[in-house]
Image (cartoon, rainbow, N blue to C red):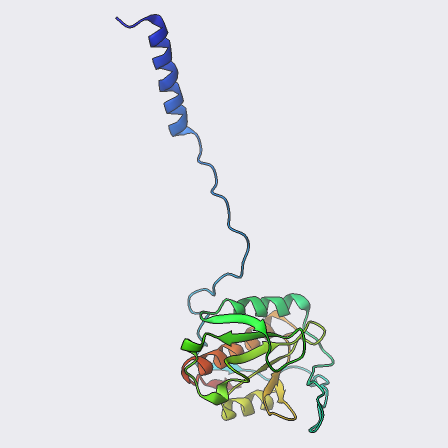
Length: 206
């Protein structure tokens, strides 16, 4: 027969085993916050996206005249910083994109560069190297990005941007509202698709 001490130890061990099975699991440690990958479908432009007319007057911009090194900037109607950051985080999480200082813009501009192996679009889809777009510092909030000529004309026609005075690269005005954020995001996705594969995803002008 087992001793009373052995029986007591057996009962304790069984109690511990039951407790281990019935106690709630500890929550796994969470990874540090990073830019989340775009949800399925968010990394591709929406076909036939309706491009509305931008509301209100056109923002003031710097002239950056030919023959000068002056920067092309948005001077009024700046996007709220929170919306600038939402746009930045979405773009920085696109597959194959890395963020680095712009190779062509002002200090502090954050550029979106495609991995060279994925940059299969035409040379006209890039500003310098594999940089297809950049967002200016927060006091400005606009972006420069490349589009096929017909699409750039639609963007200008609908009031969403103006061409750079020297290079002709489209400036897209920073989003002032959540609705404008979605429009600018769709434009950026089109620049991304064109740079990746040369694919032109059209817009529907309202």
